[in-house]
Amino acid sequence: MSKTNLKVTENLRTQIERAVKAAMDEGKLPAGELPGFVIEEPADRSHGDLATNIAMAGARTFRMAPVKAAQIILEHLNLENSFIEKYEIAGPGFINFFLDKTYFAAVLQEIEREGEHYGESDFGQGKKVMVEFVSANPTGPMHLGNARGGALGDCLAAVMQKAGFQAYREFYVNDAGNQIERFAASLEARYMQLFDESFPFPEDGYQGADITERAQQFKENFGGSLTGVSPEERRKALVDFALPRNIRRMQEDMAKYKINFDNWFMESTLHESGAVRKVVDTLTAKGLTYEKDGAIWYKNKDVCTEILLKKGKTQEEIDKLELKDDVLIRSNGNPTYFAADIAYHKNKFDRGFEKLINVWGADHHGHVMRLKGAMDAVGYHGDDLDILLMQLVKLVRDGQIVTMSKRTGKAIQLRDLLDEVPVDSARFIFNTREATTQMDFDLDLAIQQDSQNPVYYVQYAHARICSILRNLEAEGITARTCTEDELCLLGAPEEVELIHLLSSFDSEIIAAARDYDPTKITRYVTNVATCFHKFYNACRVKCNDEKLMQARLSLCIAAKTVIKNVLEMFCITCPDRM
Image 1: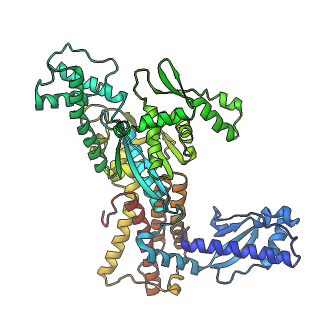
Image 2 (image 1 turned 135 degrees about the horizontal axis):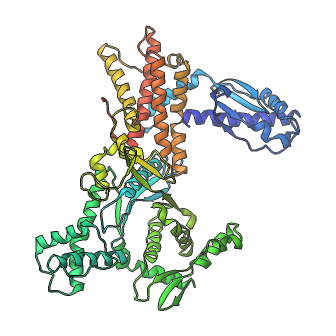
Image 3 (image 1 turned 60 degrees about the vertical axis):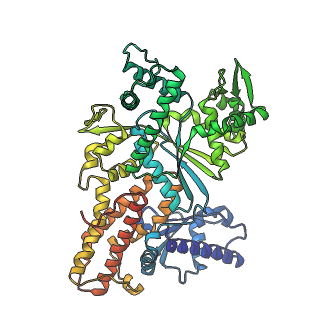
């Protein structure tokens, strides 16, 4: 809720508490502990702007019918200077409150005063939050899942920042381990096949055309210089050539997608610094590892079982999870991906982050519990690591699933999508469905320039307001700051509905940050655009009453401010003309 709305709610809560205490002191209500109660906005505005359940929540304490208790509370309630115009008792004992016109005037004054900062709050209290997302394997091009994860992760970080957190964006580059060994072997095979077609390709090698492309590029630069060297030297040279180019390509794709990471963290640094070995030693010192078949294993089952028992799970429930132990160091002496992952997340906490948020594909579901448990095992709190599991996305054109790029004839990559679809559309549309739901991304819809395209619809509302202001200025009518009395002239249902919606911007931001759900904000700003169009169609901005006209201009500018704040927060173009 806006600061104005928050002030009203906090004041109302204080006055209700005082009214109950006064009624108890007079013997009108039985003395007792003040019951917990809520003040909320009813879904149906005809039931008031705010409502409380105090009379029903206190039924046991008050020992009387809630309706009667509500009447007594209202007799002792002081609503002077509260922005509340009237109240009523409804249903089984709800007390509904109706705001007066000065409240709506105060909301518009607040938006004008705060401008680009409207919607910000201190909900996060400056807490340092790390949002890690995309983190695509650098052995090949980024795919559609990375497109969805990129939009969700970046906009989630923006929401967290707006809600008062110190949000930090990080991309984890898996430039070590098994996948790099496969990458090296695949590059070697494709390179050697340029000179000898019979050279074998590894069974588990990467089949992508990009591997052949990198091998060909190396040949163009260095010819057959690697044909006579050892496989180890050859593979290292090919990886040293190809990997930086792949990472640079990912960085270019992310920049085109308007995503700027605060850090690209290399997994290899964890191995080079000894952090991976150190975390294994830490777990061993705590008695949480054992040796088997030449490998070092982590007692994941014991750790997770203990955590789940403390959280109230029964042993029977835990047994159904079929928890298993994990290898940390293979029999060949190489650390596993899981060992590096423990070291990486410990490193995040070591850097001072108080909350870690990962945006992962749903196929990582089985990895969540064991990683959270490992954080407890290394001395941090697993509950401070939250993992948002993202479902699959499918591309649709003409109602049919699309799997191949029109441009290349190959599997669709992130850069193929961005070549075909405007970045604004991609970022907005990927944030119209919660991460936990599967998504069909409609390519036809994403390039449409009409109200069916959700981002175009919102952008058009902003451009329309700019056009209104320009046209009036051309006639010599310039918006000015209105007095409270002038803003109180706004009383049409469409005006009130729009102001109500604008007043809830920061509460929507807080809810989106709390639930890790930036799609709440795309829905919110779409509703703002809809309410603005309804207001504009029902209420003539240019009218003979100069004061009313200026008040309506103030409302137009307030809606423009909120739309712009959302679009700029999500790095989406905010056009003045369309």
